[in-house]
Structures are given as structure tokens and as C-alpha cells.
Image (tube, rainbow, N blue to C red):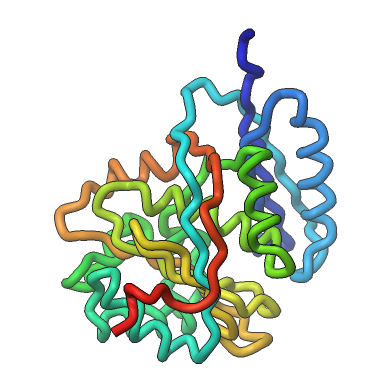
Length: 261
């Protein structure tokens, strides 16, 4: 039996030229209309305000997607700076560089202290920023999750499941699949969303609560990479290579015993 065609559905919204929200997924052709309506409703009802511009793009996926399990999630309680002091070394990131990057995301990593739409790319151990455009950064796109993997995620995360968790986990799993990526640190720029994470390649997604003060309007993403990584290849992979998450291994509480000193 021929497999149903897959389509990428992407949404972004803005007001007076300022980004408000975005969403995307990969779905079978039969689910395109439902997904478009869902994204339209999401754009119209965002905590950051009412948009005056909504763009929804639907495009057939011509290339077979890369398929892989989501990273396991570790639910951590405690002060994020102290947790990051434990986690940066696990990714091979010098502590001073990691904490400096954390502070930069909180203050606005784009020129003039503005928020970037995409991620900064930080070379380890030099700390050099490698993203071609310091205003926009680089973005991961063309990604989604299978129905079975989404059910697994909802069941295993239970009351801690959110759409934000799902979207972030899909995105960062794809980022960490590229050879040479060590980790990704994320702080939302949504003033009312204070949950962030650091994901470490080969280890997992470490969920951090109260990663910034409520009402703080800045944040962003930082992708930590090994020296010598090809930035054109990274950008091409993140933007163009289709990715589908196929399963979810576990939602755990606390650091794994093997990671503790």
C-alpha cells in the first residue's frame, strides 16, 4: 500500500512587524486542513497579543524524512544557574563560557540587546559566535512528530505535558542529531513563559524551571558546537532536512545517578 503523502505546515504571526508566535509540523495529507485551522486559532489567541499578520505555508515533503526517537526528558528542580553548573561540564562546555552565554540570552543576544528570531551558534571552547547573521541567527525547521510518539510523550509526561514541551523537544532533538553539536540552551522570549532547558547530545533534555524572572521579555537559543563544524552544512540540515520524531523513551525526575558527581 502506498504511503500517504506528507506535508510541512508552518505558521508565523506578527504585529507591527514584531514577531508574536510560530508553529510548524509535518502531517499526512489528510490532516493538513485540521492542522491549518489549529495553527490559525493558535496565532489568534496568543498571550503576547493579537497579530495583524498571519502567514501559513503548506508544502509537500519530497524527501524521505530523517526519523529518530525524541531525547529523554529529565525534570529538574532547583535554581537554574546551579543546575547549569552541573550540566555544562557534561556537554564538554567550559563553565565560564556556558554561564556567560546564559547571561547573554537573558540580556538579548542580537546587536543592541535585542532578541534574535533564531539561535546563536557558539564554538567550544573558544566562545566565538559562528552564526552568519547576528540579527536573525539560524533556525531549525521542517520537523514534526508521529501520532504514536505524541501519545507516548503525553502518557509519560502526564500532568507535566505541554505543547511548548512537545515543540521544543522535537526541535532540539533534530538540532542534536547533527554531528558536531554538543548542546542547545533555550530561554523563551515570551514574558510569561519561564521554563527553559538545556539539551545535551546523546544524553537528554534537561527541563529547567524559573529560568528567568516572570515578565522578563528577553531570551533566545544558543547552539554549542565543536570547533571545525561546517556552518553551511549545519544551516542546510536544520532548515531543509525533514525530521520526524518516532518515539519517546522516558520522562524522569532528577539527574540520572550516573551523571552525579
